[in-house]
Image (cartoon, rainbow, N blue to C red; front, side, top):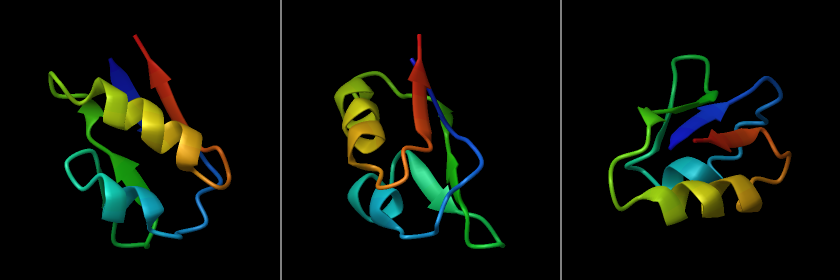
Amino acid sequence: MKVTVVDGCISCGLCTEEFPDLFQMNDEGIAEAVGQVPPGKEHEATQAAEDCPVSVIKTSE
């Protein structure tokens, strides 16, 4: 599974606080995803996508 953050992040920090293994804030204060989700973290990636207040976290197989 792959996780990405598309344009539109509002820098709320929810994903980085809840799922620090999958997301970090870049120098501009925008969330970035790790890309390939580590084994066993698929549920967390899906949950992050569901929890994002602006729906900019996307998952794909």
